[in-house]
Image (cartoon, rainbow, N blue to C red; front, top):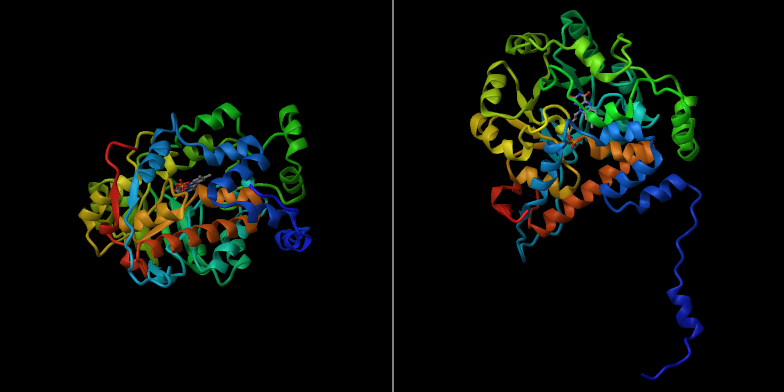
Length: 406
Ligand SMILES: Cc1cc2nc3c(=O)[nH]c(=O)nc-3n(C[C@H](O)[C@H](O)[C@H](O)COP(=O)(O)O)c2cc1C
């Protein structure tokens, strides 16, 4: 091999340094190439009890793990020379448009993950033109979230709980604050057993002890935000129990029934989706009780461990209710490919829980924006490679299951 001295002019053209940015949060988020990268950043920057509260699931976490295995076993079918110059990701759900085929799932205690919490997330969702769901267990009120992003599309999640008059009052406030869709969560008659939370001794609000003070020394930003913003509380509840299972078990009534669902239907005029349906029988009963749509969900594997994987329950539910009832799927979505697979399998729309919370923990509102941006780009590229120009083009012929090979 004959060698020569490099020419300065050639070197100059190779030296392309990134412009120095003083915004460290933006630089950190820009480097994340997918949601898993954001999860890694979130883990570094968030105290263990908060990270584990999000990342964990019930008991042995089998359902949560199986959801990943199932998504990873789906093949997406490419179509070559199909002439798809661009993909249109917009769709409609619950009677109104969404710029992307996914929205933000309701999550409780969101300011524990990052001080920007619900208001940061709703602003990011509004900018992206997708729905944001506020949980009954939220740390900002219905009105605060509406005021933070008046132009957002807002959904409210209600637990079927003991106190009917409190439920009614919340629904009246939700309607008055422009929430167009209600998600009634039915998979939480009692709190799931989240062993990581038990092992971490998670309490609300977090206590300052030797362990947490040590933690603060290498996660200073989270603690600075926590200590310099208004105190963490459930904005819609007056109960002051200090651990989640105690709070949930004091609020919820394990004897609630479809008659209670019918009652909620009778007092809510907007769209109503029942969240937590996994079988044909429950799908039928929910529709008969007046649901406009269903959320096929196992609560991210956080309630009944060993419950069916949402993606696998979808076919049974769709077969029962037919094409006329909208179905939203959640639990386990971590990528645009997971979303595309779900839409091909018959879901009309998808919700993201942990995925958005990893972004929030990694960088507040900007982190949620980054998650949405990454997922949208992944969906778009997959659709183009699959020759699908619109969301309606995604059908069962575009997915296959890798049988027995994981
Ligand atoms: C930290 C956390 C809190 C949650 N809180 C609620 C809640 O208050 N109400 C509810 O209906 N679902 C709640 N969920 C479940 C989500 O709405 C959604 O069903 C689930 O996160 C989907 O799974 P994924 O996290 O794998 O996307 C919560 C999930 C997480 C991760």
